[in-house]
Image 1 (cartoon, rainbow, N blue to C red):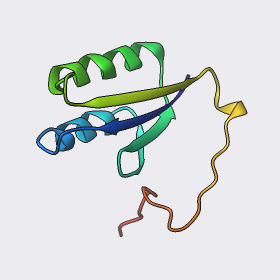
Image 2: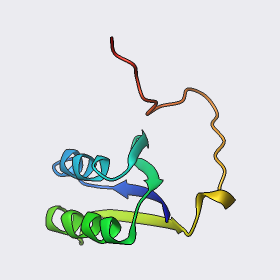
Image 3: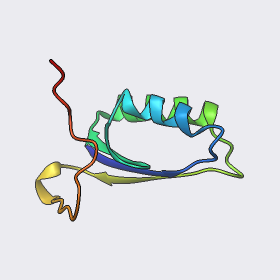
Length: 87
C-alpha cells in the first residue's frame, strides 16, 4: 500500500514521532511523510507511535492508497525532503 502520514504533535514528542516514522516512510516536509509500506509494517508503525503520542493532545492522519499508480504529487516552491548526496 502507499501511505501519506501527516501529523500535528506536541513539540516535546515531535522528534520521537519523526524518528519512528522515518524508519518506515520518506520525510517530505515538515510533518509530512510518504512511501510504500506493507500492512505488517503499517501496524508496527502505528504500534510504535501509540507508545509515544498523547491521544488527547496529538494528531496523526494517514492517507492510505492501495497503490501508488493513481496518485500524483505536484510541488510548488522549494522541494524539501529530497535525498542529499554526501561525498
